Image (cartoon, rainbow, N blue to C red; front, side, top):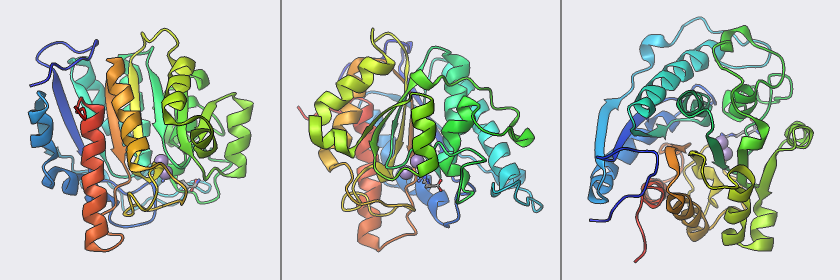
Length: 313
Ligand SMILES: NC(=[NH2+])NCCC[C@H](N)C(=O)O
Ligand SMILES: [Mn+2]
Ligand SMILES: [Mn+2]
């Protein structure tokens, strides 16, 4: 058994698995089945084998807070449902973090990160976020074309754009200099402007090609965590990986991270000993054939293991 290094967590080191079968932040059915497939693939046992105490309260049921009457607010789709679900997730993640546990949130679509990161920052105001994704997910209510809220959680967390009363519970707790992106390659024109205006650090696939993943992760951490003393929230959208590696996801974009580049990021974050929360989002087992689903779920489990202490040697 390995000895787990996580400076902010008391012994026994405990993971609280937060299963979030939720798809309201985007239009494709099936992403709500992601967490069920990840757990059924044996993820909880795999984490126990790494030496973690694993607590799983079952998948959260959000049906009771869904609402039949949820017309768009401006362009935003399912705004009330997304707000209620992410608010509940913020509470659960925050409660686990305050108990000294490491919340592992299994999505579900990436709008859930509005909740997970709120819960983290509520517990660790000094935390920084490493966001691994093909997309920046920083559209505002004004800049979005699609109206899909999974493309907007970062702007909501920063308090950018027009205020939507329904999301009034979200504090503007995320500072632009406390997030760094890795893997971007499909960023909307409005998002590019928002990233520039707010001076947000991003390492796109161009930088991954240019410097290599080792250097990129080092530069990313130098930016958000120069003294390596802040807690880290890692939010991993599986579509950061190339579609040849993780095909079953709602918005695949070619030219993504290789299998090893994705795992390297997770390993390097674990090695800091500063990880306090982890999201794995956007696994959609209803898209693609059976073999591709299995491949995507398997790679999702192994990314999580890498971020939680699995080493190659
Ligand atoms: N979490 C994701 N997969 N996000 C994709 C977002 C795509 C696009 N930028 C949008 O705002 O609709
Ligand atoms: Mn994405
Ligand atoms: Mn995303």
